[in-house]
Image 1 (cartoon, rainbow, N blue to C red):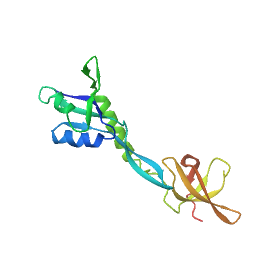
Image 2: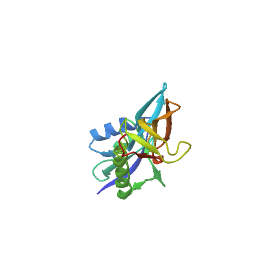
Image 3: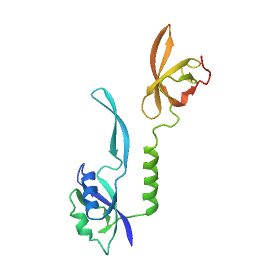
Image 4: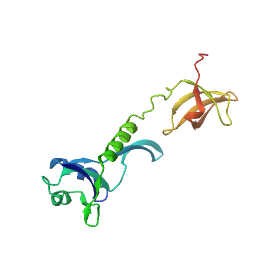
Length: 168
């Protein structure tokens, strides 16, 4: 019977371990999420491992040797208690897979498009209208507000903005 186990990997070698385990016919799962980072003054979205240094493997202990998994390039050791590898419940793995799938689809389906007119609902600019410029992370937006006949950029939470349906 196939069961999921937790494996510790060598530092920053999760992807290498997954690749080599797949070559052996061992199913592995290394959850990754997209993170927004600033590098050299630029915002970029990078894919990062959710649990650095760990991954999940699914195999039948009667068909595949734990020693062959442990000696796979990129793998350090099984996470174990009292000398026995930790069995990870199937429900946990399926829950993680669902979460990762949701994160991949987070490309904000309700996110306004550049140029959309917005009404500001909260904060010091409450009641003013602005124009959506671009997203600023997962839960914020950069909008252009007309103040003293000049357009000013402001970053604010998406929850404080409402799409203005009225065409001006």
